[in-house]
Image (cartoon, rainbow, N blue to C red; front, side, top):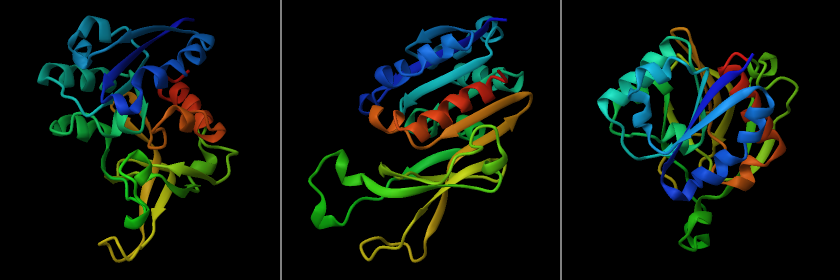
Length: 231
């Protein structure tokens, strides 16, 4: 049976929304999805169109969303449409819209940088080698089962979050003399969330195409897409 996926991509170009989502379009089609691509979240306000969807893949960093579009997105997920995404495309979208933040359950706060003398003034200033650690729940979950902890050298997301999330993997921000916090901070790196009849999947790794091509990251995201859509 054919399923329908909507890919919404745009916002800040630094996250390569077109190239990033293009990585996963063949996978969706190979798994029986008819894929529609849009460049604005305002499509969420189309109630009739949203009612036909099995999955929404969002890759829109920052940007804005109208009240009508946000209400449409929330209604679709509550009615059973899956919502999935990675990095700033889902966890740093529509910063001014608290209803959206409530839906997703995690908001980007920062990605700590290198020691100040090592910074050169570009995105690599925030590329830190860090571990993604699978939780006990994650070791049993369809998305992360049979995966081991792994390391990445990329942005390490610190997210504000709540207890409705089922956390499948975490990352720990260490204490450094040039940072103002005083103890290590454990932040969710991969989580799921149930919302009404719908499923939500978020992976914070995914800053750039090369990170998305990492075997572990790509496996997690591909499984997450299918899990969110109940495929």
